[in-house]
Length: 451
Ligand SMILES: *Cc1c(COP(=O)(O)O)cnc(C)c1O
Image: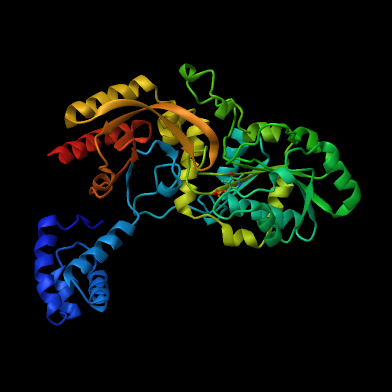
């Protein structure tokens, strides 16, 4: 990894003077300008491109070239300290997790005993079977892909009944009617926006006969409806007579959360009321789909779990090849599932570590940071889950608040930027989303600000 440290401010100021003079004269050569900003630790080809674009722009050549280089550096994906208080921050990659490292090959789909090609799904399928009670499972690139694949594999050319209250947009342009159309299945709306009864589904089933392939339930994970509402449960839907498919979205494995320590019980509603995969399958869902990087706490992926014959049809569908996950997703997912199996979730899955940490521990950490940095004060705050999961739910938390808006300075800090939030004219660093290993780095950043 190259050192991507920024050019220091003094150099930029000197450069500004030089290039002011330059701009009145004729433009430098691309090569000379690229060499002039050669102190920036980026590949030469990038500096040449920045130089060329700056010369095309026509003024302040060196300052502008440096800004382009800085923009490129800012666009590189790198580690950041999430002090926003949003546990699953969509712009920060949702759930943090330990990635794949090292230079050795990986036995992604290799049978070591026989020395032949194996399956990349076997071990993960077995672990999901033990964790959720599903007969089998496969993994695709994200949950949007999971929904598309299930509909294409199980309902292409036929009808799928969906409640009008669940024909929703999840975010990022993922709309159930559009995904349905792309899958080749026909959406049949049943019920009304606020109330859908079992009889609405049964009537659709009578009218459609053999044409009805599935009933799809979509968990409205990113909004709440209240008031005069009625919903049909998975258990009731099993009487319709076709497979019941549930898009759970948020990926909570079990709403009893057996991995949560005794001190955190009774569990908050956002856990106990969330549909768990265990409960949905137990209630009779034939297939469930959910994200790997929401409440599961793993890498971006989509999990499809349920009846073995239906999973097999998904696995054999041609779209599966276009959606299959790589080692960068499978290895961390395997690690997360192993943590659930050994009940090491709080210690090993960063998302659940953030959920479980006690407020007084956050207060102690905040006090140490403030003492070390010699700036800031402790304030009570609320963290949120994020990623559209558990809308409206908040977790009590503690922030280090420093005067004024210093959010940009913190974001521009290297090697590890810090992302906080600005409220009431001050900068808030919510410690629930900061790993304790980063406390010292946060303190150092704050102390540098006051100096
Ligand atoms: C988040 C979500 C999706 C999309 O999942 P991705 O993993 O982001 O592709 C689909 N359906 C529901 C109900 C969701 O909550």
